[in-house]
Amino acid sequence: MVRIRLRRTGAKKQASYRIVVADSRAPRDGKFIEVLGWYNPRTDPPTFEINKERAEYWLSRGAQPSDAVARLLKKMEAVQPESPEAA
Image (spheres, rainbow, N blue to C red):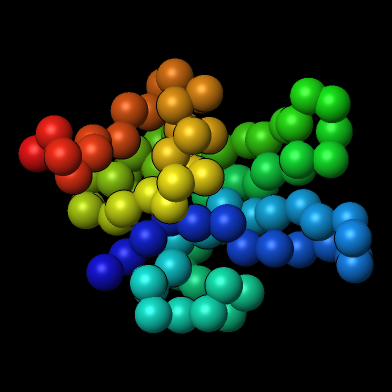
């Protein structure tokens, strides 16, 4: 299964994240398919950027967003991921 999830980057105690498409069996910071954007929780307010077209493409192909990425997509209001309960 393909997931859209966060990949940790940045120095110790200064985390920032890349939003990536990866196989669900791959480790958190391991192999990934594509980078869709970034997320920085250390700013006030937290900032992020997601490539809308590519996110929609992967969601249409059946990729499941993690809980954190689903919240970011909802904040973006452009992409509405389908929840498994609604299907």
